[in-house]
Length: 482
Ligand code: ADP
Image (cartoon, rainbow, N blue to C red; front, side, top):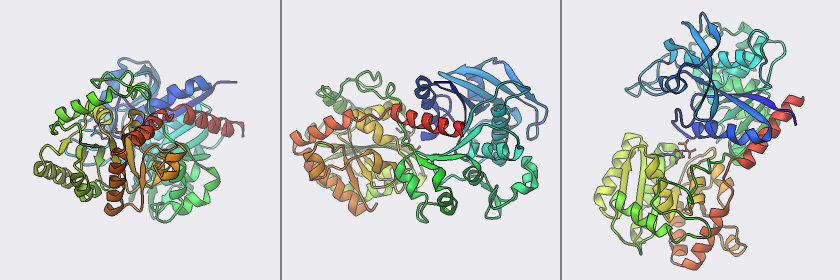
């Protein structure tokens, strides 16, 4: 089997920079692909944190003018990844996050910051000055999505291209921008090019021009082809249905391994779960819940946004309280939700605990110590929280949408009887249906023998990258052969 060379292009990669699940995927996939004969180099913007991580790395190419300033492309290895970094101080040397400044406002030049990334991807993908290029350029989300467009309009032989959608809600649509500014030819301004409702659409361009499109679960792949789930792009996606595939995300099963996890006080695995009790105790103590071993404990680890449906948890709270259960919430995001959760914790001390912020250690403890994890998303491309929950034996209670459908088997009577159940699904995504799911979970919890059977099976589900990596490898080989 010959080695395939893939250039992955993204705006974040765990553990170097992370704002969401995208970083987890970009950070984990290369290691999972390596044993399959796929060599990945990952192109990232030269944010300060990334430049610090790579130190003095050799320069592969210098741009005299890269969207308004000089820039270099540097090759390095850091955090277990082979990297290419676009060092362009005028675009990336900033305080604040990858997309937002220190006050939480989007950088005004985000269109140029990520056009530059895509331009560099296309150049490096082809190879500089006779150097070998790559077999495949794999663009992740709108920030990388112009890469297939540049490769397409540059003409000549080019690497094959893949466009992956991690969340269709983020599209990178920029009115007022011109193809000229982006260095694209005038004919790129077309309905089958970069034009999108009178503006330039980055994700739209990638979806129109990449050889293959993937998204992060089979169900989400179907949902985005419908007017309800397509967020304006369903027509294009239906048109390209032959090129579209859903490949489930995995999680890094060395970081997320309850048998070796250094972040939790007691380690356990599927066939030895008694130590889990100690994690429940530790979680209660850590977040300030009353020490009530007889009370079922629900957990939440989430961004606070409309997508995640956490307002439904607030509405369904009476079912948790009435069931004598406890709730531990870890998350941050929209102010209104943060305030509402803080108020609920105040009103029910000892029974509801809320920790606002981003805390990896506590996220592991919530997974290891909760009996069930709530994931009531209104839409969810794949979702990683429920995968961690399965691995840690916290039964996921999930909305019947997107990747949640593909990763959790509802504990119906039939699924319990044949031993396939791993959690609970509810739909439609309403507070009433979430309440019913919580009540079903409570009922099962009070039947320890049946609960433990579902829990034991949940923990044996393969949520690693292995299977998905094989599907990506197959996809790459398919388009390179063409
Ligand atoms: P999204 O990328 O839409 O936020 P995912 O479920 O795909 O949602 O991925 C979220 C990841 O971030 C998971 O690994 C989850 O455990 C983690 N996470 C979310 N919020 C927090 C938090 N407040 N503290 C620690 N980890 C968090």
